[in-house]
Length: 66
Image (tube, rainbow, N blue to C red):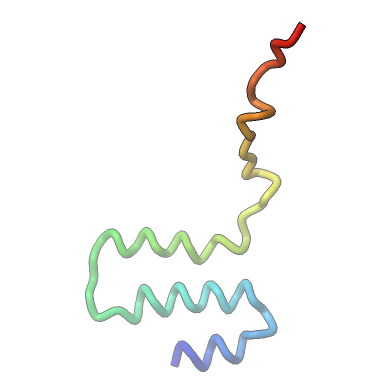
C-alpha cells in the first residue's frame, strides 16, 4: 500500500518522502521507542536551508596575517 501511495504522489516529492517515512515507521511489525525518532525524517524536506547554517573552518578563523 505504501509503494502505491508513493507512486501516486511522485509529482509531489516532499509529500512522497514523508509518506515513505511514515510507511516505514508505522508499517514495521516491531516497535521500539527509538523508532519514533525516525518520524523527524519526515520533516526533512521542509527544513529551511537558510536556518541551517554551517560555518566553514576557513571563514570561522580570524585573519592573523599582518
